[in-house]
Length: 69
Image (cartoon, rainbow, N blue to C red; front, top):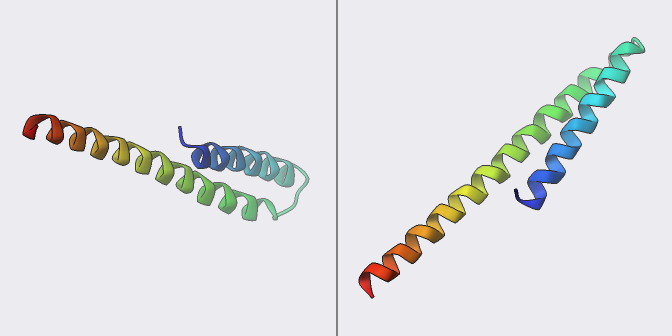
């Protein structure tokens, strides 16, 4: 998993924990934490998909080189 994706997942988990704490204390600030978790989750998914696409493109490029010689 790409390093940026790992960091984004970490931020997502921490934001979810902060949201739980905020809501249990009766604060509506948890809504902001939920939005932060959503954004960081989307970032993690983006970086994972980007890494997969790059690996697939590299594999296709290596395959094309071996076929054409």
